[in-house]
Length: 155
Image (cartoon, rainbow, N blue to C red; front, side):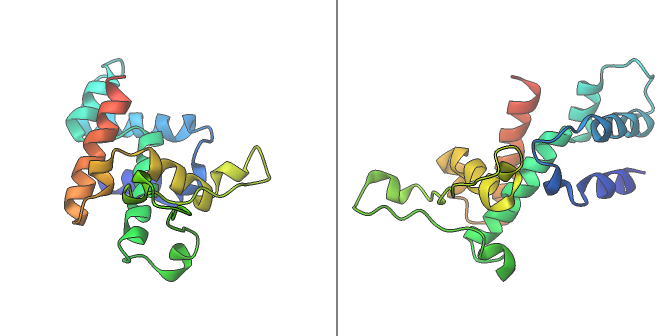
């Protein structure tokens, strides 16, 4: 059940960035109740924390940032690497060592910001520097998940 639900939720979820995720969150919450063998009205947040599951919006952000990390480290396929560009200032600035990505301008206001080439640099640049500077995949995933857990459950 656990693998089925998470694989269904994670498939193509980057396409759902900043869109209404109520139905998907409902499915995740229902699966959480089934897996944890809890009652229908038990508090879902505590169960999600116990299972180490992020809410849908944070799962999508996690996946986008993980793909971005692979692009930055040169581990991603070329079709993703072509979408992102490192920020290189015209002159020497302190921000040149911050590992920022160039945020492109977009025309379509309602849906242009949902594109990977637009949302990935914006999310990446908003991460703390210690997470952006991680060298290994495991360290990055651990720090990112901790960061997103704090943002999602305790804010």
